[in-house]
Amino acid sequence: MKKIKIRPLEPLMLRTQGEFEPLITGSHTSAQSLIIPRPSTIAGLLGYLSFKGNGNVDWLDNLLHQLGDVKIYETLIESGNENYLYPLRMGNLFALVNKETLCNLPKIFESMDENYEKWEKEIYDIFYREKNKLFELINLQDRIGIGLDRQKKTVKEHYLYTARYVSFKKEINYVIFVEGNLSLKKTDNNGGSDNTTHDQNNQKLEEIGNLGGEGRIVKLEVEDVDNVVANELAGDYYLVVSPILIPDEIIDIILEEDLIVMGKVDKISLGFDIAHNRRKETLTAVLEGSIIKKKFIEIYRKLVNNNDLFSKYEKIGYNTISRLDNQKLELRKILLL
Image (cartoon, rainbow, N blue to C red):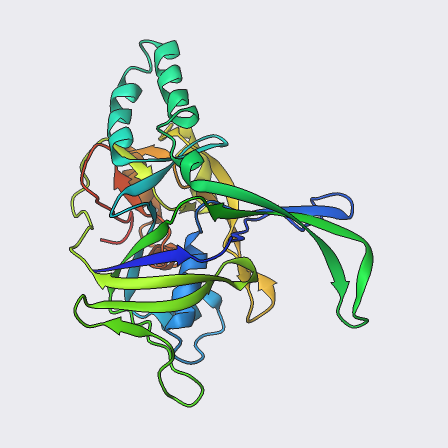
């Protein structure tokens, strides 16, 4: 298994759906970056770095063609040496927490019916006090921009937008884990190797790439690590590490069963298909940082098991989950074993 560390070298714009759309009224529009990149953004970066020539016209099949036979598990934040932080969400509240905080959550959930005020306070303390590492690491930058008429090479009248970029107060890495034979060694136009560097002693590979909107620069470091994939479905609660995509036909079933303990269900865009100049599909998802019951996984697998499209989504990073009450780093998928 390979561990890939992605270190931002400048502020990032990891856009979600909704901005620069007709839904925003007036000429003054805005965009706000996500804290953690979505799987299609990460997979797109890896696909570009392992480019093997043109594939299928469909963006997903083309991406899988570039990546090869791999499964991507993502995304954690690493601050320091293997000090992993996980997303946690309650509605619109968002936190970055360590494994110790996650392991204490099942005890809080078990007391929900007994003392509402107590568990509510304990949950809110996670988001607003020192357990939330978001405030230590994240720094948001607001920028103002204008619209340009590229043909006339002039500023468009009345066009103004604001953008909120994400930057970091400390050095951090986005961390993903990859199963399979992923090669990030690109070639230049003459067939030679590019600026990829190798550390033969530590078996590491380093690469420079572009992540998110405006092609912001990041540094990638790839190394071999022990397997972190959990084989057994143990534990009563699971953290949604990357969004779980839900087919429209089973949304009502999932929501009626009361299988989501806390978090948020929302529509998300899978990004923009630059090659064909169009938006990718928009799907319903249980967002990263949500907490689901084990029964959610069992029902999801039963209802979606034969859906080849959603298995492909899993391969590029979606539907990554982690057992809540385990101190070890363990990740797994829902459909793919």
